[in-house]
Amino acid sequence: MTGRVLLVDDDANLTSTLELGLSQRGYRVVTASRAEEALQQLDAEDVDVVLTDLNMPGLGGLAFAERVAASHPDTPLIVLTGFGSYESAVAAIRAGAYDFLSKPAKLDTIVIALERALQHRRLQREVERLRVEVTGGNGPRIEGMVVASEAMKRALDVVARISSSQTSVLITGESGTGKEVLARAIHQRSGRSGQFVAINCAAMPESLLESELFGHVRGAFTDAREARVGLFTEAHGGTLLLDELGDMPIGLQPKLLRVLQERRVRPIGARTEHPIDVRIIAATHRDLESRIEKGEFREDLFFRINVVHVALPPLRERSADILPLTQRFITEFSARANKKVKGLSAPAAAKLMAYDWPGNVRELSNCVERAIALTRYDELGVDDLPEKILQHTASRVVVQANDASELVTLEEVEKRYILRVLETLKGNKTAAARTLGIERKTLYRKLESWGVKDVD
Image (cartoon, rainbow, N blue to C red; front, top):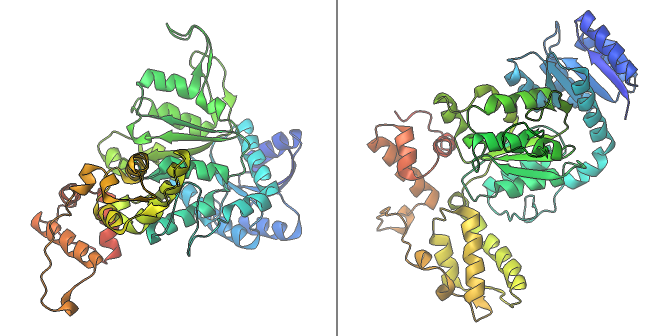
């Protein structure tokens, strides 16, 4: 697939080299040395994709990306950036750029990016239709996920907006919150023709993980009796989910970073590399910024994968989703078990709402599946629930009030309790998050939403 490319760079030598190389590949190339000139050409000529430097005199690359996104939203823009400028590149993507490449970028790498951008433009109407989810209530809905809480509506709104792009996505959240379900939904809406491939980076030793990701040739090591295709190659044209990336061995991280930067992979023991076209989605329950501080995760890899961040809140922070999720699981599991269970009793619902769900949506799913298997009625009752849910008691937060007007909302109770914990621990947020049983980033998000800037 070829098209008309607008190349914007003040480096005349680089522009000339790229123009020649792309022309030989069948692209029609027009050039501009400044962003202002490029904007005039966009208004005057039909351009399929823009390839631009980030640092230019006059109107900079970030402002240029914003102008192109506003005036020519159907024209994908790819940013070329020098090493160490990932934060600026991420800012450009958030301003409207489609993708970014690291300088010096090989011609094959640039061509792959251009092909993806042109494919994106050709399928734009279709993927736009896929982005618009059937709404449930006032928010978007994704297969496999039920949304009633505002927190999840915000998360899925982000997903709906970025699914049709090819940018890397970092999904964070506790175990069982639905990170892989969300990753699959992003892939399904991306318009990519390749398959969805997932790997758990915490489930195998470093040497085996490297072979799984990159592949190996026969004889590369003692047990390599035959060649193996790596998952990057297997996912070519599709999406690769790096699940639990925060647990990837530190020694393997620079090798992964190189593949993500170059968009080329070399199997273990091979002499040559081959280009890959893979969208990366990373997922983790770890606080990557804390691991960076401890030297357990590379900062440059973090910038590479954290282009768009989607945080999935734990189920205990979105209680509005508990009963809708329960009903969906009842429908699903009763059909599998060939039973006619229609819902659950009010006392059973109260027990589910009172439970903390440390295993999140996965634990709720298992609970409902067990209850469906045990029940003899068309409605789930208290007796069908696991013992630990029946015996669960809420954390002791005492609210005393003689007048009903003095009673406060659950959110206010939570706020007072968290601030009391912080006060007791002399403002130590790390210790407070540990005591409260939540991630530090969750604590910061709550404090920010309450307008609490400093509690030390």
